[in-house]
Image (cartoon, rainbow, N blue to C red; front, side, top):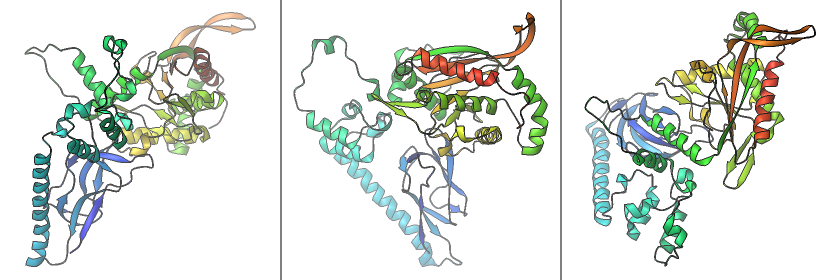
Length: 442
């Protein structure tokens, strides 16, 4: 019998780690090939890790809520043979017992060497950082106050070593610091922002109220929203668009389109195509902010807000959207939307976006003021299409007619996008939509 190492698989070139959310199989359980062993989660997508072989799970190397890097071994599976002798049975049992004993020894050693239980902290600390903190006698409270320079404000090895080097040096405290202490937002993790927000105002609860804990996705969304508002100076520009030609054209071709392409034709790909064109015209809307630097993105990757089965929203990304024609855009939109609804998005599907579009009109909203998807600098909300009376200009004079109109709401980061650019961009999107050729083919 052989021992097979089940590793955390690669989930996309931009995904380096995942959190274990649930073990579906326990030590001693029999596993079939391709059967799910555990559930994992990245920042936005939940998925399962299947076994590549059949056998018996003999060791779990991580526990629930542990953060695991791609390529790390997460479990040991003893592959099955045609017959299992007493010796072979012992080979299955003994590693489990040895592993349990070794784990118990480590737990005791940790308890003796470090009185602090860093697992009580709501912030994430890597095993290396925890070990350094334990060896240096750093308390949980002290570790939580270290400003992290890593991803999402995490404390890195360099951060804690720098803290250790400076912890015994006398600090010069200015009068201003005493009167109005402040911590740069970048130094706070998403969890810290969420924790501070929840603790800022006590909530009164009576016997008739129902208390519902946020699910993991809602907690993440909450953290993202607060972080974005704290980071960017949000301003909005609004414009009304006449989409009568688009409505007429879609009604004319949607049946033939579905028959030929095998895809439903919604308004979303038409709007996304216009946004991609406008981003090519205004490349300074297709940027990201990193500290004091602006990163001008080469590719136009459009995020589109979509609903998950649990009702939460997620933003899958259409890569290189400017290179797609309308048929290609429709296929991409439908594919990502359908996989979002069925919970089958892959982690890489939500990575790399450079600009985001959200359709608030789906819920009947005329317009909205969406929050920017960091580190992007803009997000466009599509309002509901409505029949409205409008002034129509003709060579013979003006008259009132019924037109199909909608509002576009553009939220942008005023730190790097001024009103001229933000307003001109959304106006260009409107121009592309109003100039849509009703006689064009698909």
